[in-house]
Amino acid sequence: MKQRKQAASKCIAGAGALVIALSGCAGAGSLGASDQTVTIAMVSNSQMQDARQLSARFAAENPDIDLRFVTLSENEARAKITASTAMGGGEFDVVMISNYETPQWAEHGWLTNLSELARETEGYDEDDFIPSLRDSLSYEGDMFSVPFYGESSFLMYRQDLFDEEGIELSDPPTWTEVAAAAEQLDRPGMPGICLRGKPGWGELLAPLNTVINTFGGRWFDEDWNPQLTSPEVERAVQFYVDLVREHGQPGAATSGFSECATQLAQGRVAMWYDSTSAVSTLENPASSNVVGQIGYAAAPVEVKEDAGWLYSWALGIPATSDNKEAAWRFVSWMTSKEYLRLVGEELGWDRVPPGSRISTYEMPEYAEASAAYGPLTLDSIENATPLQPTVDPVPYTGVQFLAIPEFQDLGTRVSQQISAAIAGQKSVTEALEQAQLYAEAVGASYREEQQ
Figure (cartoon, rainbow, N blue to C red):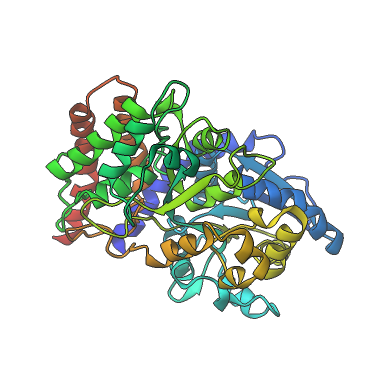
């Protein structure tokens, strides 16, 4: 407990400068708003854009509540939401966070207990959430954020190109097979694979951590000694960097989720390993030229099986919100069974936020629309191993992140080093040597706590 409180203090101290930046963000604050204005900070992903589009339906049913949306890029959202919530700034009534932040912030008293509100809301059915996600968003048995959508990771590929080349993958595929397929498919104007290279603990490190895990690597040993220069980690990172440099997309060092989604959706790349939530872009005729041409396979493995990550973009209510009742009315609407059906009926069943509720996969319309990817998505989420993410034992949990407060800063710093290697600015060995120094500072503080 002392360890986490110290980490929280560091987080609060480091967030001060960002709160100043927040105060100048036009439309982001709640100063001058009525008691029934709910300010929502959200990531500008496609599912959230759909929610904003459909929010007129909520407004019509709740005329006493005004909604104010603040949409941010993924890295910017993480920084600003963390700063505001940690400092108790009160800028936002609803924040989009994940299963990384939720348990930690709940322990520090920064979030409202949503299970208490859910139990008072008729028909909300908290037990309908997929258990692995529900548990990951809980603290001491109660949920402190509720999932808007949940995700694991899988390989997406052009089935038509695979058929032309006679390529078949194992189930699950190995990274060795994926690299061979990327080389075979690579041609002018059509890179073999798209992989994230954009710095950020939630950008580049999300897919890369799963590669490190399945190659037998780990960030720390059981005694918090950093392992980023171990042979297993160096092999995994070298493999990832070589793959994206030799057969990946142009500008890989600045490519994140959105950029790779565009590349595959526009038919400019043959494969992509990333979030299962990408189907909302790939299978939507309005945003994709490859609808019906994509095949899906479980997250590639090497040594460790079940390599897929576990993540949820979820909605929480900061403890500092002055509009908790109105905020919950919006949150419970946006994460309800009824909302999921509304998306399907109004926007198309391919755009239903996946991976949050069990009942979603029981809807006949959704089951038909998601036949190619729905069962695999659900299976990947249910089989993710955040409590045992690595081959060898570790003192942390989390697949694509380490569930410790320091990881936001540590992960971002390490990702910058590896992104530089992808850009050709330094070698993988040089990047990992610097990353090891960053990790040593974090590991030392934990070792001191154990003494």
